[in-house]
Image 1: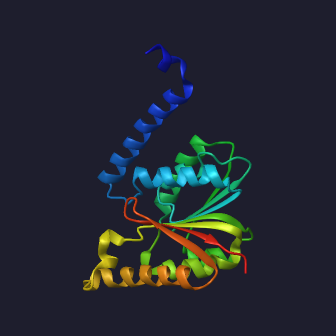
Image 2 (image 1 turned 180 degrees about the vertical axis):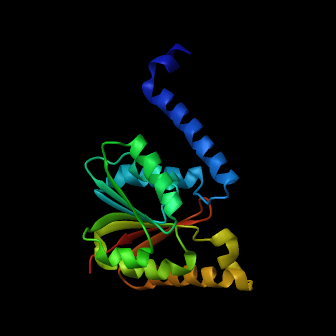
Length: 210
């Protein structure tokens, strides 16, 4: 095992796996919805390839998904929005402690009210908030996107319910919102989208300059 003791990157990865498992267990105990590890690794990979300078996360929760978004952020900035003040506080404490030198800010409130006042243009957006509002989010951020910006949305399959003909009343609002979101990013002419069978389904969309 001498190679392991001398390989800092591998040792850091093992420590990270322990951290993520601990965060997952805590989220399960508190019944806080978070993305799965595979979805998180996809976010991490996209960030490595795209090298975004300005990231927006709609629905940051306690910062689990945020970790993957800002892990490789260099000379950039991150903005996270969530309705839940307690979770935003947890996210801020966790992320700032892990990445103290980065430009990171968290905002508490309704994203649809906050986004119009944001001054920045974003090149990477992650959406994981109220599913019925997905169509509203994409329209709200459209004039905040740089050409070529990447928009990633989680839970796009909604536990497979978007493929069913009959949906119960409890889920219908969310399912219809996701379907409307898919229709918009597929047919508006402003986006090029791909759908990936990871976790509960993820859409990866590129914004095409008008």
